[in-house]
Length: 356
Image (cartoon, rainbow, N blue to C red; front, side, top):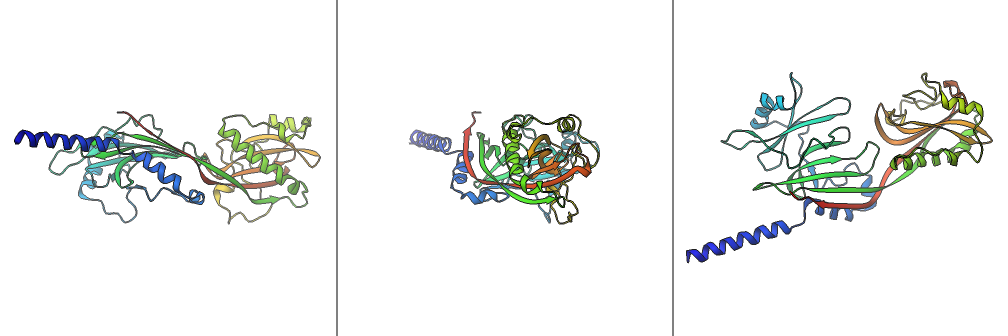
């Protein structure tokens, strides 16, 4: 009888393991939920928040004794490369003995982290991550978080592949009774729309109205060429003309003073409008990738600057265009435009399981 019982238990355990292995991965389940969302849900800051819940402590959180001990432990500070009293954050994979100890620093908000296992009555020890974190580029738009994914505790790494991208890419590893489960990846590719925002005109500059449609086409071309990692093609904006000597000279060496076409941190020309009510991320050009080209509008050449709005390297949701008469000094600005981009629905959700 004992042999039969043991055999029955072994069979039951095998069947349970096989069922667990055959269950859809967290990435597959997230992809299924993503496909069910209505298009307008993607315009929200966190469309998957119902199923992907980071466990980072918010305002008013009272650290547990374990969390306080982890913050004070010199071992984890040394692993993070810290030498002083730099701030360290701790978050717990919900319902598990696994903690993420992290430090975020620099203008790129770069994250360094160590995973720790802290079981009651046992020595606290470092825990190997489920996949290599060194190649995850945990800066700017990407980070690692302890989270609950579709109800299960998991390590989630990823975010937007680039500051101006509406897409999201993740690697996810669940925590199980046996440790890390098999990891998976999820890529969410989104449609995007672009709508005209505010525009600003030098008084009496007729080109402002005529330039609206050209500026929007230029903003769309800029976004498409950046996505394709291609140079911006100026020919569609030349109306079949060859740029004159003045605009070519301005392109070769645009004035670089404050407010000029070559200003690396060009503020959007406002021509006396009150800029205090404007979103700072839409009120000046990011210095990440502004581009300059000649455009032919209303029977003459202008020097156009196009790029994402932002502060420093940080890019926001607006594409900005400014028009200057050659040679492109601050007094030569004649018009500026905002075009606001928005995610507009899921194009595809691709989930892949990873073998351990």
